[in-house]
Length: 371
Image (cartoon, rainbow, N blue to C red; front, side, top):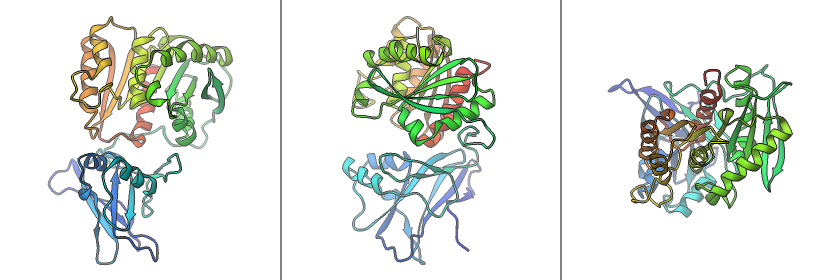
């Protein structure tokens, strides 16, 4: 009988943990000199420190490969496997990009898969039993389907998701890195599920394409970019679709640098963006490391500036060693300034496998009936 991976077993020393074994069997005739396990952010942390050996699988007597991790029972992560020939992959950026270009999903599993872009292979998804529920991310039978259309506004590609049926729109959501959410991750399924359950009102969702060469400039507390969204995009959505121009019913959401930008939009233009949803926000910006004295520019602006009429949903992964302290710091500053803040830490990394559930939770919190 074929073994299905990963194998999840109790940790005999602590019921809060699990022993998780990943395996690689390969196809008939395949040969390799080693297999690297890529557990999102966990492997990357050791790559940053220059040592990938903790993630090299062991060869078994039958020619297969396996590795066992001790993980807390609420861990969620996308993962891939990289069978290689020759020496162990290096840890430079170029080496890592080569690994990511050739890593493959687990073919010996029946777990969920996370799509990829730019020609890369999808990832498998590990969700241990105590990981937060993600009730909205998968397409449901019988749920009315919304529609997704492509547009251009002020030279920017914008995809717009509108809910099924007729009736006024009650909210607007602006999603940065919209080409990832729309074209790759099919966020329309999530939006349709949220709407069908009454978790959010009928919402115009504006998916702003930001993954091109201009991303580092656009998503770095850029006044002109945020003003474009506030003064061109939102009025356009009102004219075209009847979307409300009400900051209390408008959310801007982003991940990583997009999370930084979402929070900055609420700081710079609270007259348009009354709700910010930041996932794993890069609040270290603008400096190269978290240790620079000039870093956390936006957090210092919130600490020193006038209080804005804005609400926040912030989340960050416990595995995100380069972001966790800065997100906690922003939370503390916002709470000290008496902002309305919902703050969560999930046991995972810089990972769409985690963010897709958090996005749904954040939209429901900021736009839902109790908002």
